[in-house]
Length: 556
Image (cartoon, rainbow, N blue to C red):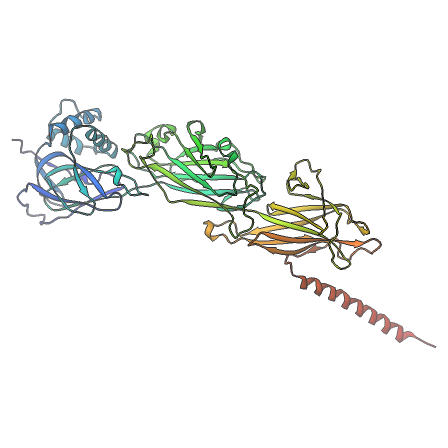
């Protein structure tokens, strides 16, 4: 019988992400007699149950320096031997070496037992006649002494976790505890704020304008046990978003490394997004599939094999970043104001384990959801007479946005800048579903009996507080300012309602001394009363001075 001693301390540090600890019962100066069984516990939250395959049987005792000593190694069974040897020979073990002792020594030399090799061994064992022993997480089990390969049961892996590479454990002597630690992907979502060309958790936009959303996934480093690796973005849009452009606009990119940001494409302040990948990124759209559900609310983007897309396992070892960009404008049914907004959620489905079937749905688990939100506002502009602030019908106005488009009577925007609007009986023109920014107003025709102002005046809508870390923290502050003879009246962020007035003077009335001035956006009428009082007070002072001067110089 072969009595050669084989010590394997390295087998307890398979992966940087997998930690195995052995409890030492006896002092280093003494060794207990070998027993036929040993205790092992798999702890942690990765899975609720595991399959344990015995590779080698052995006599095992506790040695010095927390190491265990194994002797009399033998293959656990013919089925195990027949499953393991082809894998080991393919990995570089000489074909002449076939005994358990030789295989164990080769595995212990030069760190041959990598996570990738342990996964290959597990795959071969799973497809062979080898029979595993079921282990329940957190419960100690008595197993025959020897080397065991511990593999998470795919069906028992918890949501949000991931099966790790198999762990090789030496059972016997003092009790053994192994604790798999899963490295899992993460996902985030952002929306493009066209005013700053920045990807944010919240942004505002004009209804029907292109509105780009970005999905970003991070695949952690160290996933060397996988032969292939695909991910799926699962996106759920609120009823206020238009899904009709999603599939045609979808672009997907990948970059090596788990760090480095997600600027896969360029973005401009006009709301446009480029399609050419930035340096270090690869366009993999052709290898991806986008499927929009019949109700239009949910769609899935499935990537191809990321390992192949990056050029092989050596590159994928450093992790990966995946970005999907698509266009989903606000539609006519969207929510206005900050009370609800128009949220858009995503979660990422990723392989349950290195052994999961990635061709269907069962082999995937998922991340928690992340979201972004889009807002829009309503501006009501009322034409009023300076003689009593009464509404005036019949004023013809040109209202242009910061892209040079003008508002049409049906509420759409004319790209040629030729459309005009006319105030109704209530004196109002409503700009519904508008982005923050500056609107330029020209009066082309005043109501009968009133004088149109000359030139162009601006109304500016400002939304602050959109650039936040999480949507829940977004508390946008909405304000409006106006250039005289426009007047800012009110701003209600909750409903998104903004009110402004355009003041006309009756024909023959001298122009206002405030023409061309800049009116603040508080919507507080008291300020206007105060201004009027100040003007009246100044006039009284002038009259008093004139009377005083006249009285002081009067002579009979």
